Image 1 (cartoon, rainbow, N blue to C red):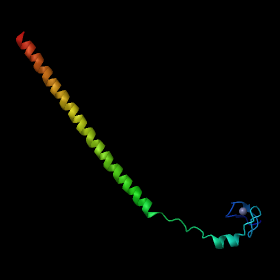
Image 2: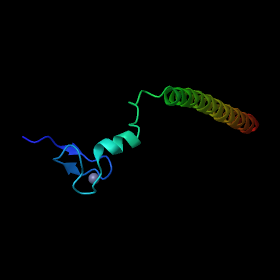
Image 3: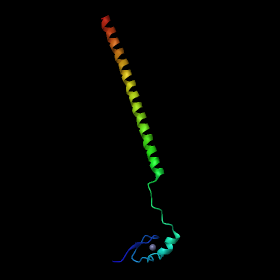
Image 4: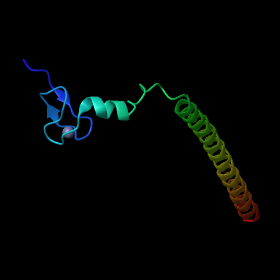
Length: 97
Ligand SMILES: [Zn+2]
C-alpha cells in the first residue's frame, strides 16, 4: 500500500512522498522554507478572557436580579398604597351613609 502525503501547498493527496504532482511543490524545499506551526496549546489569554466574561456575566445577572427585586418592591408598595387609599375611601363613604 503506497503511503499518501498531503501537499502543504495545494493540499493535494499525493502518493509520492517527495514532490506534488499537481503543483510541483518539492516537499523538502517547502518545509525548509516554511516553519511548521507550533502545536497549539490551550491559550492562557483566551482562558483568562473567557473567565473574565463569565465573571462579568455573573455580576450583570446579579444586578438584573437586584433591579427586578427593587421593581417588584416598588410595585408592591404602590399596590399597598392604592389599597389603603381604597379602603380609606370606602370607610369614609360608609361612615357617612
Ligand atoms: Zn501541491
